[in-house]
Length: 109
Length: 120
Image 1 (cartoon, rainbow over the protein chains, first blue to last red):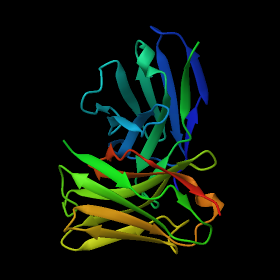
Image 2 (cartoon, one colour):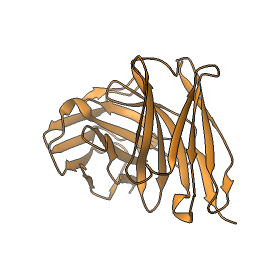
Image 3 (cartoon, rainbow over the protein chains, first blue to last red):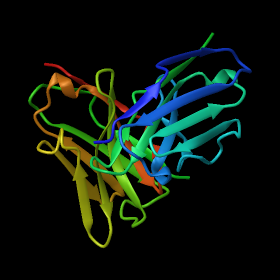
Image 4 (cartoon, rainbow over the protein chains, first blue to last red):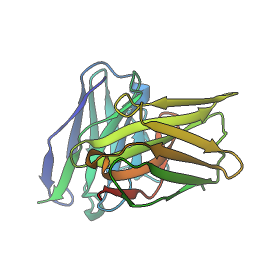
C-alpha cells in the first residue's frame, strides 16, 4: 500500500500570503494519478487538482500543483479568506487503488 | 450537471447491517468510463476508500481488504443508483460515508455524506 504523508499538519498564514503544502509518497506515484482536494467543515471534499497539475473545473488559478515521483506540492499563490480549510492529497495506483494523505489544515493566523 | 444524492439511516446497532444508497443524476451507473465508489471518513482513520463498482461490458466490484469480507455493492440500473451493505458493524465503523464518482484520474463528484453512528 502506498502511504501518503502530508506536511505540515497545520499551516497558519494570513490572507494574501502564499501557502505551500507537501505530500510525500512511500513509493513512486504516477504523476497522472495524484490529486488534491479541499474540505470545509460539514462538507464533502472538493476536487481541486488532478494529474498533479491540472485544475478541476471552476478552480481559481491561484491554486497550482507540481511534483513527480514521491514528492508533490500544492501551492496557493495568494490566500483568500475562503481558502482556509483542510487539504488532502490522494493517489490512484496500486492495491488498494486509492489512498489519501492525512490532511493539512490551513488556518488563519 | 452530475449529482449524487445519498440516503440511508444514520444510526445502526452493533452486529447489524449498514445499508446506504447513492442515486445518480446526470450520468449513468452503467457508464463504461467511470467508477462508482464508497469512501468513509473518521477521526481515527481519516479518508478511507472502501470500494468501487463499475461496468466494462460486465460488472466489477473491488473492495478494500479491511472490509472485504463484510462489504457488498449493488448497482441498480433501473433506478440509476448503487448501494452499500456493510455487515456486522462495530463502533469502529462509525464514520461519515460518502459516495463518489471516479472519472479520469480523481474523484470529481461527491455525495453530501451520511454520518453513521453505531450504537445500541
